[in-house]
Image (cartoon, rainbow, N blue to C red):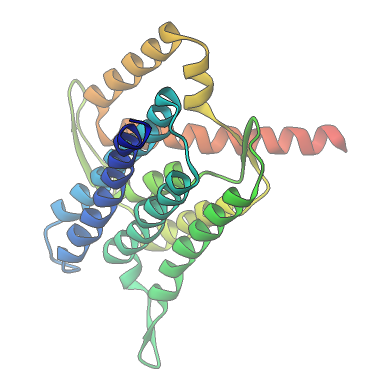
Length: 247
């Protein structure tokens, strides 16, 4: 019976991986610079949906009491696809292809490779660490979501505020992309936000879900970007505060 129940969280883990795989395929369907940006927008949303699967698999495994070593390894491999490789492919297709070609080699490819390398190292380091109250380094899901949702910000038709668009400079995006990648392998501490909220009971979890879904309904991609940005920024500010407090 326990083995059968263990299939349930594994299905969510595979759902996460499949979303990442589909995001890679949709990113590859975009032909820069005149292709249909909708492919990249869909890819960004698929990575976000993968994060929902990722958030559920661990919670379901704990609820069913079927946590296992193989489940943890599968989760890391799925995360490597969805929040490492897929965001790297998407970023290259959307922005980094514009970097110059030197001696027949695209420097944009070298920049794009930084993110998956950092994500895989981050995941390997996490597997070697003992469990604690938080994360060392930015977790790969919010990192992957943050860089992958950027193409969707180009033109967002919000519910009450009309169309909100933003022209992204590819050099500015490259700096942003590398900073987020390096945060994954940094010593900056981040909280286990969803786990912390869930532990406080059903009421806080429900309120958090309702607030975020309302923001998502109204602001769409901008809500995802804003929430992920706040999470990333909070970790940096907390790190700076602790650094100066020690000094």
